[in-house]
Amino acid sequence: MKHAMAAASGAILVITAGLSATALADEEAFSVPWGSNSKPGVAPVTDESYRQECGSCHMAYPPGLLPPHSWERLMTTLGDHFGENVKIPKAHWKTIINYLLNGAAGRVDYQVSNQMIRNIKGIPVRISELPYFRHRHQDIPEQHVSGNPEIRSFSNCTACHAQAEKGRFDEGRNMSD
Ligand code: HEC
Ligand code: HEC
Image (cartoon, rainbow, N blue to C red):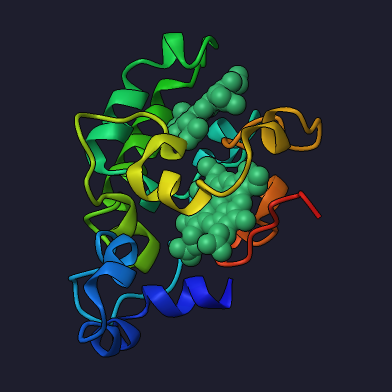
């Protein structure tokens, strides 16, 4: 986990840039070209109506985990939301979509947000299917997730990331220990 944090910081990337390309190919493909002043993690959720309407079935995902088009797609297809019909009062809907669009990845300068939008194709509606997400979770066997009643799904961030609500994902439990 320490390693993960270090790899994401600009300073380390500058140092490693001169090293063997083969050893670094994997990290390199996901490195941040945005400069080194990005804040760590993602911005935590601050909007109460968002937390209320979108945080009852799963955690209220921080807006900086998906790009604007993805939030727009999600907010305009709530009648068929992963098999659920999500109903939201109209006044709240407007507040929430504005909140999500303003804080979306690509519009804020946080390290994890900047990573999440790399190499995206189309308009993904799952954070857990983004290339960076897959890259960082590829070593976790699927049966440790779906087969564990405490986790069930990769969408359940808080099961493994105790600080997820605070926008911190650098401490992850793989639940295999
Ligand atoms: C009635 C329950 C319910 C409510 C309310 C709800 N969701 Fe969901 N949401 C789900 C389910 C079920 C899934 C799929 C979870 C899974 O695959 O394990 C999901 C998945 C998601 C995902 C993808 C998670 C991933 O795998 O990366 C996003 C993003 C999301 N919801 C956003 C929202 C937003 C925004 C709102 C508020 C407008 C909202 N949800 C409200 C039930 C709900
Ligand atoms: C089954 C446990 C598990 C679940 C569920 C899970 N993660 Fe992770 N995640 C981990 C582990 C373990 C790591 C550390 C991997 C490493 O050290 O390279 C990690 C790493 C990460 C990282 C990279 C760390 C960083 O600061 O860049 C991000 C971002 C992340 N997870 C986000 C999420 C989000 C968002 C969700 C929910 C949509 C989620 N994770 C669900 C276990 C999980």
